Amino acid sequence: MLHDEGEKDRYLITYADLITLLLGLFIILYASSVIDATKYKGIAAAFGNYLGSESVVPSTPESKVIIEPKDVLSSELSKLIAKSEHSSSVQLEETERGITVSILDDVLFEPGQATLAESSKKILREIAQVIKLFPNDIRIEGHSDNTPINTVRFPSNWHLASARAVETAYYLIDKEGLDPDKTSSVSYGEYKPKDTNITPEGRAKNRRVDLVILK
Image (cartoon, rainbow, N blue to C red; front, side):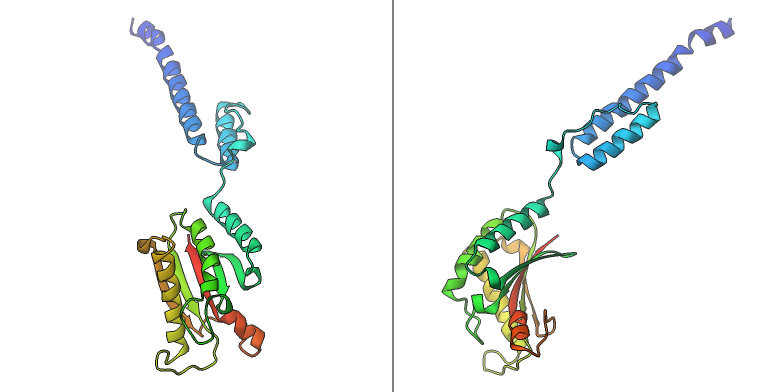
């Protein structure tokens, strides 16, 4: 009698397995709505192998491939710089820290000064309109060449680069609407050159302000 009841209830094991597999399928389908195409295909293949089928989960159309925000940001900034009258003095670079927009000092300041030139505000405004649409923190970094400076206001290149970074950051916050909670400034003076300080061309590349859109 007990044997007959055990045989009668064996269908419950198969039923439970089926429910488990269906639950797994629904989880995979939900997860696939928020992952990119490559991960989607990998999950579909793995799940198909588990069920003994090659096409359990439908393939996702290419139109659903997710574009990373940093790619959009980089693309928009590249187009902006290419159209700018200062394109030869503005450079875009992607590093492990994020995206850096380097602006040479001849665009921003008079030699040995830290007051923004009126002509610099157009490019700063255009850059700000792009980067403030993204939630990333922004760090404004001041750099100089190694030509000595010793004035009442700027006893060293570190002081000059610091004042330029602060001036740029304050303008972007006060006039262009960057979030002060996400914007900071720092000075590296002459200690992080981008090029040689031996030639005038190299020194010109070192005198810059970097706008770093952090990851």
